[in-house]
Amino acid sequence: MVYNLEENSGSVVKGLLFRKSPEIPKDANSLVAKAFAENWCQWTFEKGLTTLVEVLENKLLESGVTILKTTHLTSIKINEDKKIEAKGARKGDVFVADHLISGISSKQLAGILPEEHAVLAKHLLKINAATVAVVNLEFDGSVLDIEGFGLLYPSRESRKVFGVVFDSCTFAQGDRRSSKSTRLT
Image (spheres, rainbow, N blue to C red):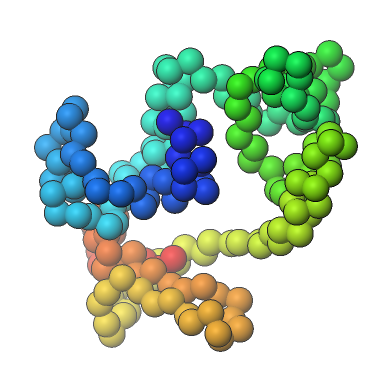
């Protein structure tokens, strides 16, 4: 599933977010069915976005996928059986797989590819990475003069800020229960 999302859409996240003709899953509970029927474009999780990551990880593990975290690789090659063979930084660590999904930067990945993939490595080295930070703010009381999703700055403006989400307007259930507050991301 994850491999197909990446292969068909260019990324797992794009594949999940931009599926064609959403069909209500057969095993969907009433909330999921409602989200599909009403074509929700936003949602939240009570325990944060890590909930999605944990569920995806568990589903993958249940289907027989092996997930290696914080595993430092020194090289990747395709062996005679057309399998991916990855050598780990610890002596003797060799991992063999049908598919490998990397979570490292394109520049780091280029550095561990074999010589026969020099053209791919060259293209990977051209991909720029961006440093991203998320800032969450909370203020006592209602401090916004407007309500809505938030604002995005046009890309033609050379700002170091992408935009602001008015969390209190979008997901009020996350607000403090004891007193009114305004949350921004």
